Length: 232
Image 1 (cartoon, rainbow, N blue to C red):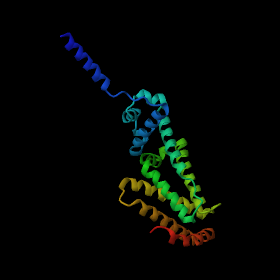
Image 2 (image 1 turned 60 degrees about the vertical axis):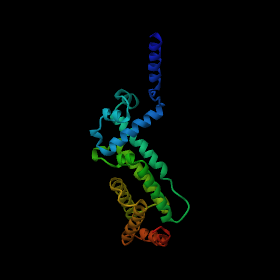
Image 3 (image 1 turned 90 degrees about the horizontal axis):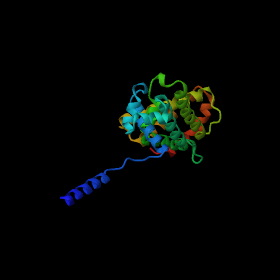
Image 4 (image 1 turned 135 degrees about the vertical axis):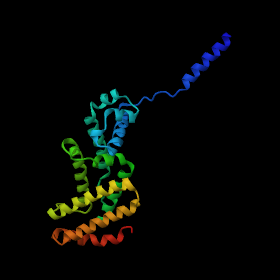
């Protein structure tokens, strides 16, 4: 009887030992998990509609833990967007080799690498109404756009754009952002085809602008031979 009881007790302890131990994560890793969960939620819903409890539940953490790391939802929102922006900006480094449109196409590919691999972060950065575009949030989004703007200028070897070229390049960047969000939603166009389409958009915009500005006309004249080298 005692032997049976002892065996049962040992089996009980063995079963307890077999249960998976709670993961012990580093501070940085835990913060990353919380921000990833927040970005996923912010990419699908307005920030105002996401609560700390929602983030805690999505991350498998306690409400108190989220507050411990971030202090509140606004701090978490800002930290999550900064993380996404930093990852994207790290990819937007200009290439030195190749012709202007080849370099631009390479930068566009790296941009869409981020769109595909970090869909939640990209969507969270660009979605949302005017309420999410003021103050620090607006500065984060604008910093990414400025980085992309500078990348485009360097890839096309433009040092100082005039008003017409500046407007043209910023219009193209807006179309790239819209295309990225649409592609994430539908994914009914192959990525290489979409990237090539956007390069064609750039050339079409420059052709229209060239009729109004000599700087753009000179730039376009140097770009046109490149088009035969791009993948069809």
